[in-house]
Length: 316
Image 1 (tube, rainbow, N blue to C red):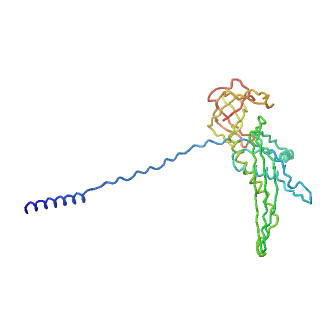
Image 2 (cartoon, rainbow, N blue to C red):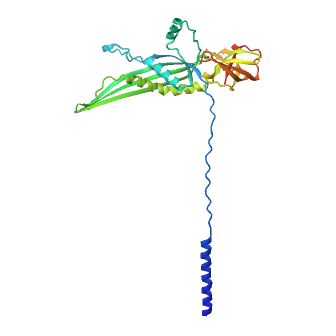
Image 3 (cartoon, rainbow, N blue to C red):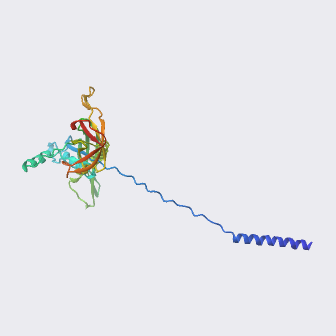
């Protein structure tokens, strides 16, 4: 009996030692996770073709400063400020060719005085606007030992975008803006302020900012269009070059104008859709500014079939 007990104990010890040896010699391979770097997708941006835009005028429909009752006669020209601020915002975007219309008399006088060549450039779109509301108010809050004065200027503007080719209003929007200035004193100490004239400009600038995005978006959604300058056997010259965003190698299409008919519903003349008759590619460019630049193109597809250049237009 004792013999069998020793044998059983020997077997158990052997199994235990073998198990320990196996555990200690086992190698576990841990796979490292593979991390893939995200691929950068570079989107090729199409060149921006600049539309020619003219801000014709801003009128002042507000009554602020017009009344001389009780000696009130403020000379602040709200409509002039609105025109200047809108012009600056559109020019700073770099997306448009802005043409001077508000001060056209000054430009014409300069041309006549110095015998310069007239810069008659037609615009694709006109912007007409008005300052519909403008005013100021002062509010004071006086306590036992303190006093607070709040000056507020507010403005409301209305703009319309007109397609020159049709005379149709294609976009209209209203925007409002407000600017405040606050100062106070306590126990006679604090900031004393007088009339803050800068609030006028800030209120109009805020009102213009609320409509400028809508103007730009609608302008950029409209197709860019140019016209034929000259036709040769194997090439064609069109108006517009590098300053308008055209590049050598760009492809353009030539359309024959559709028939113009009078819409009996609106009484307006409507140009029917044109027919695409040729595809062009820009080979070369000439000119130094908006008034004399152009592009020389070759035919890729189609032809003009003896069409007159006045019957054609070029579109991206």
